Image 1 (cartoon, rainbow, N blue to C red):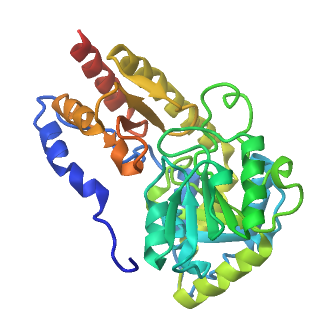
Image 2: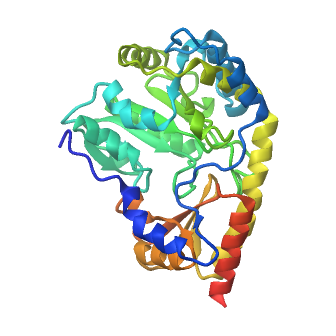
Length: 368
């Protein structure tokens, strides 16, 4: 029902966090996935240099920002978008939660999202009273679907949709008259073949949509690749008519990205070196934690890309959460990501090198 929202899921983790904190070596938080590595110096300098932000920022973003986003899409994602077909957002979570509202959805319409998914897709449907439909099969999407969320690489399970799967989703969404959005925030982090060597495809990839972006959007965030979670630095791009519609509503709602953050994004998008360095940090942490999980009896599914390991040993996720807590480790239960992952837990690679090494050691000790 519109206006009735679920409890915030992470509040249920309080007793497990308390149990983990009682571990003699202290708690290791591998649950939420908040970055711990430094924001790039070039980005911090750009933020400080734009601190005299006495005027209201443009909701559409500065021209310099829009051009930087369009150039980045071409260079890193293999996608051609015009500067007027991009729009900065106040982080990506607000876009995910508010997009049904921004598009004017309501009751008797449906929002589709992956079966195993970040909970904010469902929340966005609830905010407008729309039906929430978890489905990975385009043939199952109901006729009243008006918004489709894809997530590749996925949070939490790290799966990647290839060009064929993306194309099939776009074709079906267009048949239904629905907007389709690719949430692509982890696209710089591919670990297993072919994604360790190939670019993870965007929903706006010419092999998916040709030159026709009608009804299609790509959402992106710099929270993880640039350690800018605290900046709320994100953007969306694609169909220029949809972008214009979103811009109009966001102007009325006052959803403006602060001018210093806009300057910081320009700096971040122009600096590939810090992204490469961050990628190697996560690659190294994954190489430490993954074998330790497997040696402790966990099977890691998916996790071919992204910032999480999606693990199970065939028992209820809450049982695994409790077992990790006794080791002083906080992990996320699969129940938070829908009804289709009751036996998995999510472990984030965003903890520091020392914490990841300590987590691996505790797993090894427990397995002896």
